[in-house]
Image (cartoon, rainbow, N blue to C red; front, side):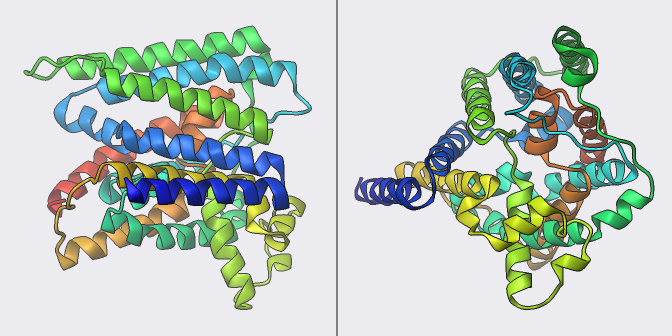
Length: 363
C-alpha cells in the first residue's frame, strides 16, 4: 500500500510538471500511457503470447481479443481520420523490401524475446529481468535500423497506401472488417485442429482489448497521430549517440528529415511517442506494486545471450518494418494503412519460426 501511494504521488507530480512546464497535451498523453501500461500489465495482454498460444496450443482466444481490439479501434479511428484529415494522421508505412524483411525478423525475434514493443515495455515495468535487459538493446537496434533505413528503402519500395484517403471511409471500413473476419476464420480453423476444446473468448482479454482500443483512439485524438512505440526507443538511443558525437544526424537520410531533426534537438518530454512509452512503464510499475508478479524463470547463460540478441533484432527489424505490433498492426490496420496487413502476414510467418527457436533453446 505504501509503495502504491508513493508511486501515485510521483505520477501526479510528474503529470503536474508536464502540465506546467511542457504542455497540456504531453501531460494528457502521459496519463494515456499510464492507462495503457496498467491495462496491458493488469490483463496480461500479450500480443506475442496470443500468437504463440495459437501456434503451439491451438488456443485462439488471444488472437480473437487482438482482432476485437482492431475492430473497436477502427470503428472510431477511421471516421475521425475522414472527418479531420488535416488534424489527424494515419500510421502509414511504405510497402517495401524493408517491410517484408523487418516484419519477418520481428515476428521471430518477439517470440524468442517474449515481447514485442509494448510487451517489452510493460514487462520491464513489471520487473521481469530479461525484458529489463532487452529494453536498452531494443533502443540501440531501433536507432541503428533508422540509420540504415535509407539503404533498405533503396532496395525497393512504393508509396504508402491509406485506405480512408484512397477509397473513402465506407469502403475502407468494409475492407478492414472483411480482413478481420478472414483472419478470425483462419484462427478459428487453426484452433479446431486441436484435440482440446477451448473457448475462443477470454473475458479478461476482451475487456483489455476494449480498453486498449479506446486508449489508442484517445492517443490519436490528443497527439494527432496514432499510438506508436518504436520511434521513442530509437530517439532515446539517437540522443545518446549524438551527445557522444558518435554520428552526424545531418548526414543521415532519416535523422536529417525536419521532424526527426527537431525531435533530436528538443527535450524528450516533447516527443509524443516517448511520453506515452514512459507512461506505459509507469502504469505497469503501478500494477507491479499492487500485485507482485513473482519470480521469473531462471535463465541459463546461453538463454540470456539469445534473448539479448533477439531484443536487438526486435529494435532493428521494427524500424525497417515501420512499427511493431502497435505501430504497424494496431495503429496501421485501425487507421487504414495497407502496410499493416502486410506486416501481420510476414510477422506471423516469422513467429512460426520463432516459436521453434524458442523451444530449441528451452525458454
